[in-house]
Image 1 (cartoon, rainbow, N blue to C red):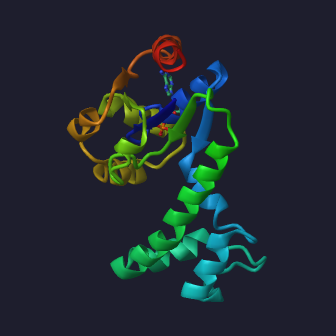
Image 2 (image 1 turned 60 degrees about the vertical axis):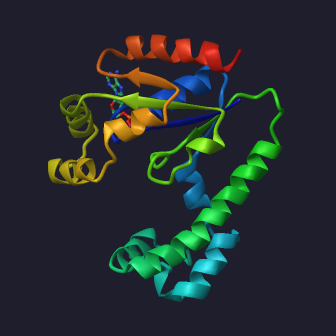
Image 3 (image 1 turned 45 degrees about the vertical axis):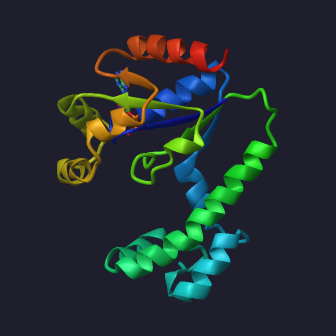
Length: 193
Ligand code: ADP
């Protein structure tokens, strides 16, 4: 079983991923893989230096993700070029991880960009996590994010309708963590059967 997991920022997607992992799922964290493929020795690292020059390195020789972000977010063409490096590297790494797992594993692909990147058809099922906007804002404030940053990030999200349209399972996470765990367990019973 290959389950796609997504949701808007502050909905509780990472919390759900952790709960699924505790229940026995193998969770692949898309953001973590995207970082990993740019580490020294990885294919993305060499390709980024080749394309963007060693001005994107920090003093220790690692890719400075902030510098890289500043460079590409001003220029759609450069952003596309970076995507062309990172995307295939992530796809290859994910394929490698999945090949190393038994067929019986329930694998969860945790990505904030499932809808944006139209990944839904890759999965057997899609689980989408939702929460009301005020609940999400409060959770992000509690997590230490600046309100301006939160508003900017929230403004940049796809709509709930677009998320629902690709979902097989929906969890609304406005309540307690115990309530969330109960709902995650219900989904787990269906995807791990
Ligand atoms: P996302 O990955 O969707 O951005 P997180 O899982 O990181 O969201 O959750 C955002 C914050 O809200 C975290 O600090 C998390 O511990 C907290 N949180 C998530 N769900 C609940 C809940 N049901 N009750 C209380 N806090 C929650």
